[in-house]
Each structure stands twice: as C-alpha cells, then as structure tokens.
Length: 536
Image (cartoon, one colour):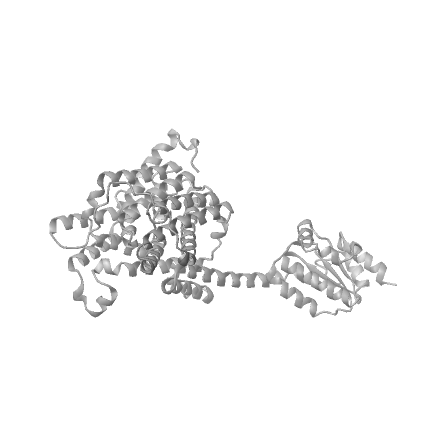
C-alpha cells in the first residue's frame, strides 16, 4: 500500500522510467483486450487506468502493474454475450455490475485473509488452466485475423479479407521474429501497431479498424440488478474475482522471486478489489496483476507503488490527447498480438515432457485444459483443484498412517529400557498404540481399521507423546474407540497429550468420556499404573 515513504529521490527516477516503459508495453494489449471483449477499446484502456491506479495505491505488491489480461477478457466475452442475449436492454449494465461485485468479493477475500490459499493450487491445474485460456484466446482471434469465422474458413478460404489477413499474419511473424535485445528498447507490439497503422493509411486497403477513443472521461453508472439472473450474476462475479485473484497473486509471487521482496497477499486483494469495483462503475473491463507488464516495470527500474500510479496516469494522458488516432489502427494487428499471447501462454514446456511426467499429472493438466475450453474457466479450476486435493490427501494419509504404530516390548528404537521392561511384564494384557506427527482427517478411517484388527480383550494405552496435531475427525474416531472399549468393560488410557492436541480434544469434550485417572502425563507413568493394577 502506498505511503509517504515511497516518495523519495532514490527511487522516483526508476519509478518514472518503469512507468513509461510499462505504458508502452501495456497500450497495445489494453486496446486488444478491449476490442476482443466486445465492450470496445475504451473499456480495455480505462481498465488499465482505473485498476492500475487503485491497485497500486491500496495493493500489497510494490511493483505490480494491473490491467486487463487474457483470462479475464475471455470470461468477459462469455458474460457479456450471455447477459445481452437474455436481457438486451440491461445486459451490458449487468455485465459491469458483475465486475463491481467481483471487486467486492476480492476485498472480502483480503479481509478474511484468504490470499494464501489461492496460491495452493497444483502446477498441473495451473498449467491446464492457462493453456486452456491460450487456446480460447487463439480461437477468439480467428475471425478478426482472417475476416471470417472458423466455420466459414472450413468451407472456403475465398471468404477471407486478403488485406486484413496479410496484415495480421505479417504482424504475427514480426512478433515472433523480433529480437529480444531490441524489445528492451522498443517492444515488438509497438512496432507492429505502428507498421500496421502506416500500411492502412498509405495502402488504401479496406479493413476493420479499432475506431477513435473519446477524449471524454467515461460516465459513472450505478450497478443494475435482476432478481431473475441473481444466481448467474453471483456465479459470474465469483469467476471474475477468482481469475483476477489468481492472476494478481501469481504475478506477486513472480515479483517476489525477482526482487527478493515479500508481498502482502491479502492487502493485494483489497487493492485489486477496490480497482475492480470502480472499473465496473465506469464501464471498464475487470483487471488483475499483469505479469509481463509488471516484470517490464520492475526491470526498467520501478520499485514502489508510485510506478503503477504513474503508469495509469501516463495511459490517461495518452488517451485524452491522442485517443482519436486509434481510428487508424487495424483490428488485425490487435488480433495478431493476442494470438501471439495465446500461443505463448500455452504451457509448451509441460506438453513437451508429457512422456516424463506421471500419468495422473498429465491427465489432470489435459482434463483441466479441455474443461476450460469446452465448459468454463471456473469449472475447470474447481474440478481440477478438487481432484488434485483428493489425490494429495490420499497420499498424505498413506504417509501419516505410518505414524500410527503398535509397540511391543521388542521395539528397541522407540522405547526406553524401562518402558520395554514394563511392557514385557504387561505384554499379554496391554496394547500400546502410538500416534505421532500430524494426524489429519484422511487418516481417521485407517486408525479405526487399525484398532479393529487387534485383540479388544486387552487394555488399550493410546500414547500421544509425538503427536502434534489431531484433527476433529480423528478425535471423533478416538472417542468412538474409547466408547467401544468401555462398553465391553475394558479400559482405555491416554498418555502425554500436548497442549494443541488437548485443545482439539476439549472442543469435543473427549475428556468427559474417560476417567481423569486414566489420563497420564508420560508413557512411563501410564505403564507403571497398569503394572500396579493388572499384575498381581
């Protein structure tokens, strides 16, 4: 979050240069995303201005540059199309209400400190998700690039707009071939925009153009609501909030790795949320952290939130004084830029190594990608994350089951000589169950099965010397074991319960189910008690 300490002579020069450089990179993308969304070029431009400004002021990542991005644009295409088709009069207004509501959800994510959980998504899910977005953005650019839909092209290539296609493919070729060393001076996206614009001006060719952006500021519009579409509005807002959150926090992690700094995830979500609330009120696209623009700002010298603020103000100045010149920019060049983005964000590195990666991870990645393309992005993320977490829990449970052990007098590694002697004396009368490490809910069934396989005619001593966490589900299972033994007239003893585990037990009043004289501070004390009571 911006503070007075950010305004100092040592960093301001770098912030200015970083803001200028990232502005040059951001402008073509803002135009392209705005046009692709269906809301117009100005919606993309003002997204970069509004979210860039407010996310920098209130966010938690110093060098973050926010604005429209691929996933959010693809989502907005679907949202706009859906609402306009269902209610032509208010469809556009409802779509931007979704943007503001998404901002509210993001702020709530931040207030409830949920930021850290959004980064706990497995790599195959992220890979499939981003690759799916890449395919979607490429498919969405076929018509503006070739001047015809994919269905029309499959029937006949004669329907193509020749000049439009020539410009688009030429720009795409330049984007791929432009040397990286020159990109630091002049980004390839600026080169192709200027080249395509000059071609349009001097060739006389007919092709679709972006159109002029008004130099008037966007008008304020109050949110609209439709009770009949309430469910879809909330679901769409959660989709936008989730996508913006993932983009922003992934970008923040990238910044951390480059700058050796640490961002504040929850504060970042608050800042992004404020930006999206205001963006929706002014008819702008939703925004999030933009990795390429943020890295450009960082490497050009930007170090504080001031660079993001200046970035937004520079774009605003360009729009107000030069917005009319976008009337000469061919749509094909923006399609080429986005096609290049789509191809680049497909995880080719993962796909090239599918023969080296475990089958489950490959299947998870491909399933997430296909679901993102065929269904929607939020379903892809939710299903992919759910499946990944289930498998992870199962694998962790298998490891944690190793922490549940039945001790015998011959177990020299874990028992002291005194304990071995005591257990030898009690060997035919007592079962010693040791629970160690963290025991989550996935282990509960295994714990129950483990106890059911042993002789219940003996006294049971459950030792928690090395247990550091016992979840509620496992606590319930331990309670069931105690009750089952007691119902058969057998004793259950507990030993060495640390404070955290004791707190878990107290939540379910487990100590009300067992006599206090059967709860011991140490394993030796429990074994001595059993020797006195069981050995005659």
